[in-house]
Length: 404
Ligand SMILES: Cc1ncc(COP(=O)(O)O)c(C=O)c1O
Image (cartoon, rainbow, N blue to C red):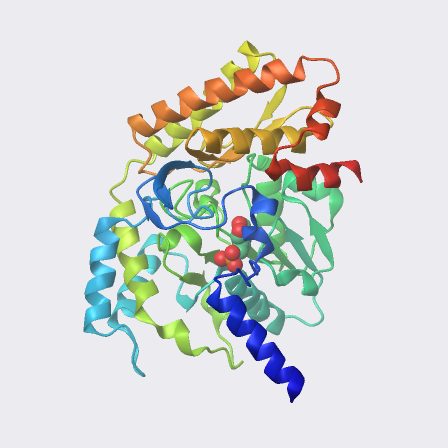
């Protein structure tokens, strides 16, 4: 009793003094993991406000979700209208039906759609539907595919190894795969997936990051693949929670109890419906051009300032890596220096339709300055030791990691 009273008193004093008690619960969102600041206050277009300062966001624009940019006015208007009219009831939203019709029109080879709120949960749901149709299946996973799925799989293949897939595994009963990340799949891999499907393998294509980013629709459509199930999330609803599991009737049908109260909340359906309506009229070559421009900037500045880097292939999800044994240290320094310039940057850039010429100009100017500094640094003798001895606050944690 006394201890409880004491605890409450301490909590009260701590709260009263405004001392921070929280710990960010997601590793993926911790500043020391990803390198971006802890909190934001506003996010609009390609800019993010932190306290009183606006930053250009040239990182992954809402973990890849906000292809139209943050707080898109067109989508927001419709969402706000729906909230005012009541976004939730015990009945189904008409927007669920409208979105389903739209999705089925984009995928003529599918008949059924299910919805939930997150990509990881949707992939788990898709896998559950496939497992139900097979007896003790061998499951292969290619790529990230969300936080849950790994428990069920027999073999995991890193997305960098997609082109070695045929060498690494023989025909599984079920395969869950990301088709594109930082490089394109070999045509041999596509042919193998088609052949496996004919022989009875269930193909589950993870388009959580690629969907409606690489092209309007899924990137599987570019390769003439018709996976048994395709999963979308993130970019499908531009920042509002929605995930889509769409597929062929035979695999999607189920007697299992698959249900969750907020899966029928209509905000995601409205956001998804109007996001797709807007994206349909967007010129996707703009995203490609943005990615190619930033890739060229990295490549030319690296040459100019004698920095060794490796570049990715896919403009809509473009990335670079410092080509040094201690690349993490340099990456963190790049991130931190770019933030000092007012730019949220990472070693990858996910273009959005909100990145205008002014923003790109500001990025190039800052990148030039930071690459110049880094170039000067790596061409000095003993630079790593020097950096390790005088770390700025952000890289301190990473240096510990590097020394392990
Ligand atoms: C390819 C891919 N699949 C699945 C997921 C998981 O989606 P979510 O974070 O919405 O659960 C991600 C998220 O980064 C992803 O990139």
